[in-house]
Length: 493
Image (cartoon, rainbow, N blue to C red; front, side, top):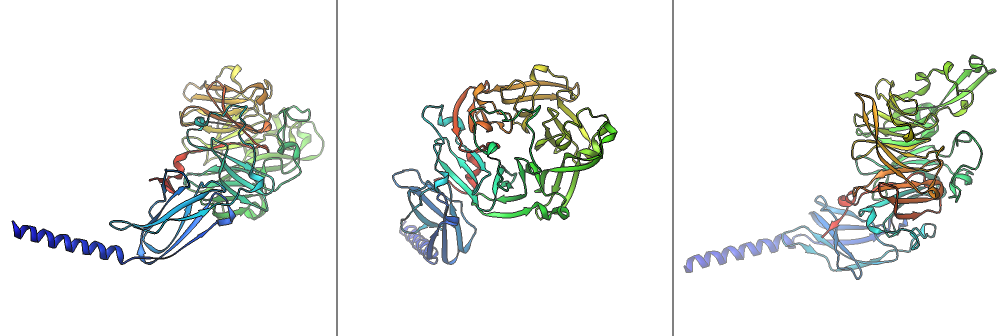
């Protein structure tokens, strides 16, 4: 028995000595803090060790019992770790932890985030309006500002900006979450379109026209560059469109997406000289149309599609009326089979375009290929996509009824029937003649954006408002950022 106890004592002593040696053979040489791009919600921790080891940072807000930790880094001597979604003008405490048997922690240290940039301080949530903070299901709303400075901001259910990215030389018209968890942004030079960039109580267009279509060559949603930004705020690359295809495509029309292969897909402005005498006009005019361009992240063209190659101009009764903007494609996305979905506003239709041949596979809406109840026809729609239920969803601007809202349809492509599923009409005061978006949230509610009134709402499936955000600018769309997207950067300890 004594012999066994002696052996155990020796083993414990050796093991303790080994653990002590392994733990104390590595040490922290330095810890430095910085605030990248002077962003109030972002802090960088640079850690230098005397040997290669993995580390993480444990941190918490002053007065809070909730502690967060960053993911474990790969083994290295030098580590750059980002702390994200911090609150402005707030004190935080943190420790650097080396991933050893017992964990080697630095002493507790602190930092204080700076005050928020004044142009981001706004009464985003008003007490006299619906503000059920649980309605967003723990996620955030992403908005883009097309004025200067251009920025992308993420606002939580309390109306606090928890993340933003800013660029000083250009505005940001729209941004989307990519398949790899980054942001893809359409950059737009600011122009004197105050009529479109300021929310109005009267959301309809301010001029009398059959359809509120664009003015000028650029239009209100045109972009001249594309950029990818990771969630630490680093711009990974930027493509200026005047460098693509020898300057052939200088303007993105409304939308930009990343496909599952990492290629960039944009809507373009495609013009075509045309002899108008063929349709009873005079002389040669330049027709304004649209197209799809696929390029890699260096701006090299992979594939392109031109609507004029698929259109019968000589039998088009509206060509003279809308010659300078015949289709006004305002939204682009992917069907479940990776073919393209485009919203064709002038036609009040959604088209499916084959990503290989460029052929139009079907049309949904008024005068389309699907049988559908005419009372569910949509008008000047935006934000086409396939929702979590597998149904096609759009934001119906509804020019003729003047009642906007998110709608979805189950598409039977065997019997060619479109069956309405969601019909969430917003209150009349939230009517928007242009722009806007509608998406299904993880909790089954809807995130809807009434652009011209400057409001973003969480509604139920009938359009009743549960939560409302008020913007001081016109948001082209409002995208949802789920809480899980941040698991790559931090988790609760």
